[in-house]
Length: 107
Image 1: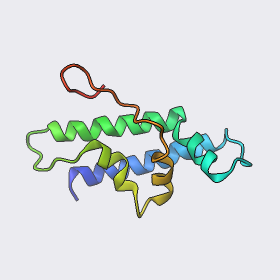
Image 2: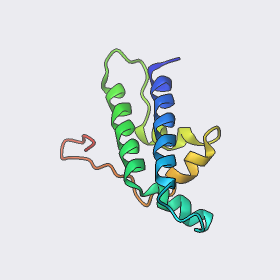
Image 3: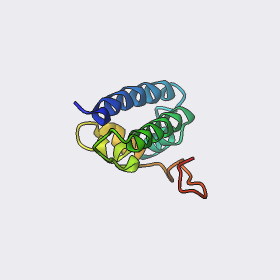
């Protein structure tokens, strides 16, 4: 198992925990689309998303690492399939809560 796969397992675990915490504050009578959207814009979910986007980018900067994984692929696309419930929530984000500074670094 490489460093990205290990990091991804941590991301999935933490994302599931954040979503479960946020579910406590949502109206269970919302339709599925609205419910998933509300989860996607919650503070806890956004914080986990940002954390692992930056962690993936940090792995990419490690010269000893032989791989490069696009942080968007890591945080969104890798969830598709096995973690489809998480994928549906994350893909509903209206924008990715990541910026780029004048030097091309994520902020």
